[in-house]
Image (tube, rainbow, N blue to C red; front, side, top):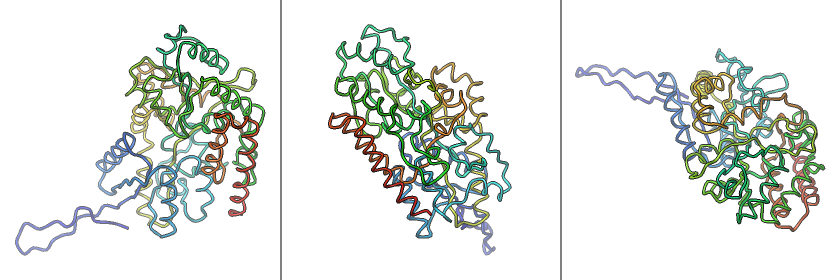
Length: 437
């Protein structure tokens, strides 16, 4: 569907015939970003559009991640789908099951004759969005992983050495006791509680979140995050909540405002929270690796990614897919990825962008900004640590959030809450399996 953007060229001579200008092929990209991320995304689009004359990408905000996914599904059913749809990582299984709706990225690149190498992408990032044969289904765009943000001033005020070892949760617990004794109302807060404290906890300690390699090898997967490790960790957090050491602020990123305001000593959050903390914090802060429990021999392994990838939708013309391929390659280029990584705290999705950022001295000037990458790439992934592919996972996360909140308020112990979440979540998995047989 080509649309003329420049109109027609009007001849200067009276009575001469107007000659139509060359039409640029329009590429529609629906996304979920606003604010600073939306501005940076728009900048990428503007840069691409200015770099060539054959294609023009038009970005459209479609609400948050869940809303954007639903909008894309509804548009496809109506035959009005965009070329590119941003989908958060928990929607991967849903997109894979959408028979006829998606056009895998590896097919787009091959059919368009684009120069494309899936092995150029960081292995833990690539593995989330590829087939077992290594063929890329969607293009990683904004990938992040959880880390520990530390308010160094809060540690000093509690009489602690701000350089103290915080590698393990046991060490963090000891520090929280001192911070609480010093009068703090928020030794610890978190964002995205399920993602950080169950999904990544499981991967980091090499225990299953679900069977069938967390859903990668079959739709008949069952949830398994009610095992001894997960129960012990959630019960510890429940005890911290009871003792005033853990402040629960909400299901998404509500706790970020408390940390950036200097109210909390520790904050578990996405590596992409770096830009906001750097811009707003009026205290000395640093980034540390996500803590692990020292009594688990397999820990630490690697954390897993959050964020989103870009899915190409079916139903468009070959010429348009050539533009899609060119744009996706642009987004993956070293210069674009290095800038995106440095501006946002998201991971650079390619090895080349990481090496470029390192060569530019960014990590030396901004200590801790490479922790997320090292945390994900220092060890080979296992079936428990390459990610999650679960149907109806957005709804399952809602169930997990509800059950965790019951632990934080003391209404349930961790075992009861996680058993309930697994049972309720498995019902959704069975419905998803039946619908996609």
